Image 1: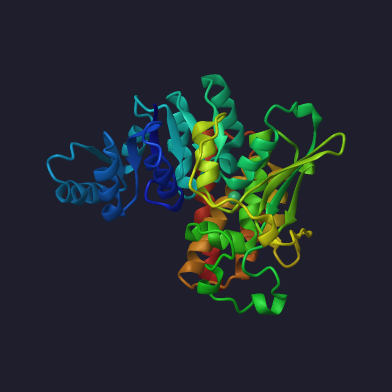
Image 2: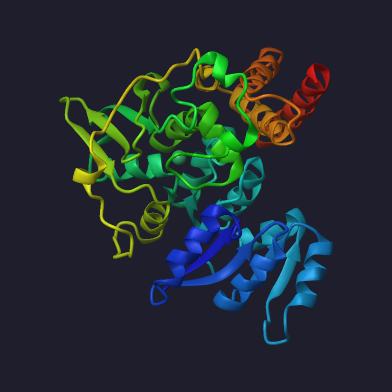
Length: 386
Ligand code: MG
């Protein structure tokens, strides 16, 4: 029986993870959950999965949750950043699913590693912001970090049993998002609701917007660098609108391995929890005849500059990826509030990156400082252009 903690249990990944766990009660037991403010959903999760401890974002939310539960729900409730750390390092857990959205996921993920927990990592920001520190600490603590992000799960599966010296390159696939075939002029007028309509994947809002701008793929390129210890010159991106090939690898002899399947996060989540085992699920089987043609093309970096910005920040290294990520979070939040346009996103991020002095081999403190600085700087730039 594997004991599981979920950080971000009410988000899209958290809910899918609980779905997998609920269907395999003989394999998994939930011991701790952390959520933000969605008490109604967290309450249902507590009643169903009976965790020993939970955490929410604020004291006020914790009190509301306490009142909404009955006496028989003997769950301990924590709150705030300290509460989140408490959940991340909860002693009886074997695996922590790190699925908080955004940079807020970094510190609790590190806390889980320090506590010796294996990590199922859905929070790509952990690797983007602090890949060197996180992978280093995981080795020290003999902790396994298994990818949940579908592309990285695909690569992880393709590389299983292979020698890393035989890898020539990694090819991350990208659906291209809802605006793949839009012209530059059409992109100027896209609305928030259009941006939130992803053609293949059902995901949280932030990652859906990042998919439309290709920033998501950019962050994933940096994530792949740290997950698989490969240079950026060996990581390529291909647009694949059908989202059937979840990513692939090429070996030195020219052999390709690709992982395919229907686009459903429950598969990579289950694999991260059961690796190296595989378990039966109720997902429909992929019908390649019905799927029809599988297309591949090169990404258009002129039309979607975020991908180029991410490569540049990744190659620069140091705190540049931290700034890229923070600037994107603030810019996307402003887009959700309709303060800026979709096409402003790369311009804002580039402006912030241009004025940043990157620190090489940053400490965790340097990373958090750079994150804060970039947030303030991005907000300032947004105020100016509004
Ligand atoms: Mg992904």
